[in-house]
Image 1 (tube, rainbow, N blue to C red):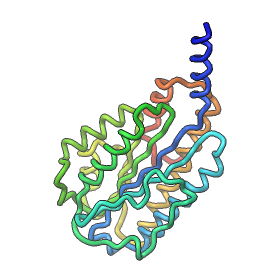
Image 2 (cartoon, rainbow, N blue to C red):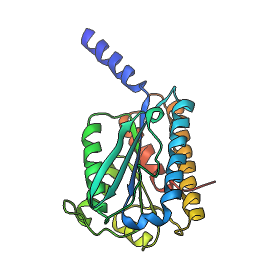
Image 3 (cartoon, one colour):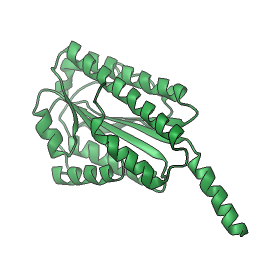
Image 4 (cartoon, helix red, strand yellow):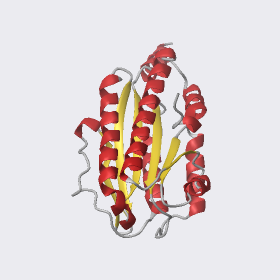
Length: 241
């Protein structure tokens, strides 16, 4: 009886924990991004501002984390990894310097594999991953298309959501090949780049609002119920009212 009581109490404590929301952005830093360096910096900083605002607005039900991975063939860098948004520095022309080629698969593979391992055993979380690029994969060594597609599909089954923002290539064709259905294709101009990042910010604002409503309406939701909720909304990340 005592053991059952303790187990029940632990289960209740677990269910009332804040939901951990993992905001993951994997952004191209290859040479061709020079053309939109300024709006890409400004746009990302607006997205970061939205995550910071969500951390304050939904402090009672959620805990926000921000991960930014910048990639080119010279290096794949974790600018910050599961960081407290309030402590995450904005991007600048000194910290976002495009150059070299595009190891898209390696950037995705490393990021997703590492995060999956870290979240193992944590049932109360939500993950939204956005990939931003202006060109095709051309320099990966560790992962190929088949491996990344399989990884994305596996994580979607676990309730993760994915989005793809692209320009200057067959954006929809590439996103389909990666099994990503939330897609924005934008013109490679300062105005359209900023417009697209602002759409990303609005999408994340809606995302955490839905998360908050789910937590308030279903405070004792099971893991299976949470996965069902995440899957139901997974394909409408960019859908605006």
